[in-house]
Amino acid sequence: MQIEPQAFDRVLSSMCTEPHPAARDAAERFLATNPGDPGTYPNVSALEDDAIALLSGIAGLDEPAGYVTSGGTEANIQAVRIARDRAESRSPNVVMPESGHFSFQKAADLLGIELRLVPTDERHRADLEAVRASVDDDTALVVGVAGTTEYGRVDPIPELGEIANSVDALLHVDAAWGGFVLPFTDYEWNFGHAAVDTMTIDPHKMGQAAVPAGGLLARSPDLLDELAVDTPYLESTSQATLTGTRSGAGVASAVAAMEELWPGGYRRQYARSQNNAEWLADALEKRGYRVADPTLPLVAADVPRSTFDALRAKGWRISRTATGELRVVCMPHVTREMLASFIGDLDRLEVRASVPVVSDD
Image 1 (cartoon, one colour):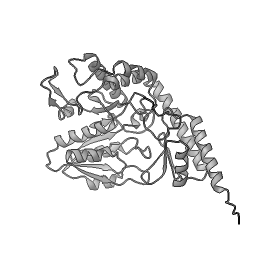
Image 2 (image 1 turned 60 degrees about the vertical axis):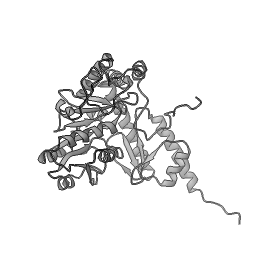
Image 3 (image 1 turned 30 degrees about the vertical axis):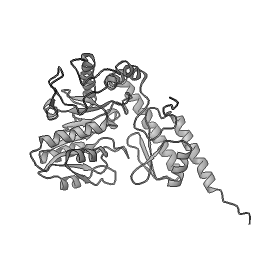
Image 4 (image 1 turned 90 degrees about the vertical axis):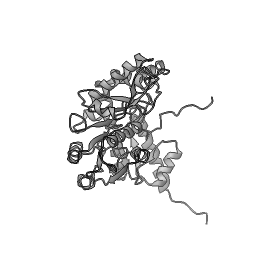
């Protein structure tokens, strides 16, 4: 095979990163195991229990319950499935801010449930009044985001929990990206802060595990029972996961990364990433761009499309928000040197654009 994997030295928009060396080694050793068949692979099944216990500690969940998913999309779909199957309504709906991940649209399509999108406020957080106006007796689930993919914002999770409770709905928190940085902030986002029922939290993002390694947590094992199906030819009697066969690589990698880095390593990484985001935001503001305040390690700025395209042509892996702003995620592999090089290329493009074209006439 001639093609090599993408290098990370110019990747500025991904929410995945290079795995920690311990996570990489664990993934390779457990690659051929299957936690979907715990009777045959008891060692990796025990590791999955360890992974959920570690994730629960990070997310403020006293009694660990959940499983290691393929990523945030699977976890979000499963959360919607739990809420739908628990609901008494024949036409249940899910209420979510427009900043929610597109995986919820997939969930709505697959599960035949209405998805009601509500606007965000001027800070790009869920508008509570709009949420209150959208829920009703058919609402099965309210979704809050703890670290949005476009602006890194944290919705008012305790208040969303109160709204969900008022209509006997579940509250799901999508902390797929934010879950490994929020413990080192003052935000209220987890099971200990609010009436959270289910949560998505991904070790393969800021957790520095190998892809795929997502996580679905539930306040009570009873919620997971909504997902269970019989497994007559396996030694286990039922299975709550969406996928059947799963590689143990993600499970083992997640445990290795968390054992190596929680909490001190993640705390130091958050500080580096947040400092880098604030440095980049300041550099862009000094050059006249309007920048959204980086409350978490993510920067959005109104860089023109022509400049964005020129930066892409130079090899920078960057993306744009739905409203067209440049989006940079300061993941663990993003260094200050990378950002300085990026700003250097931006400066050279600005100089070139400002040079007048001299006619030969």
